[in-house]
Length: 69
Image (tube, rainbow, N blue to C red; front, top):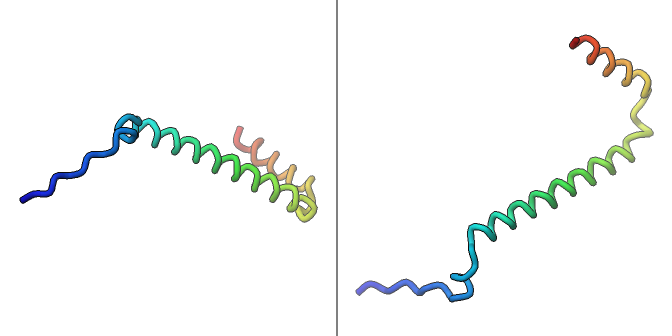
């Protein structure tokens, strides 16, 4: 008639699956954040000589901050 579902092995039953999955997800999230931070740092290092006039950029950002007050 109906096939009975095979039960999971005992070592899988003993592991708290939800907690393990949550731990894996947070660990992957931390690794991705670190990787993105690393990439942004590398891009900042390589893009710095081509950034143009730094003082002009500083003045523009400063004027934006001052105009918000």
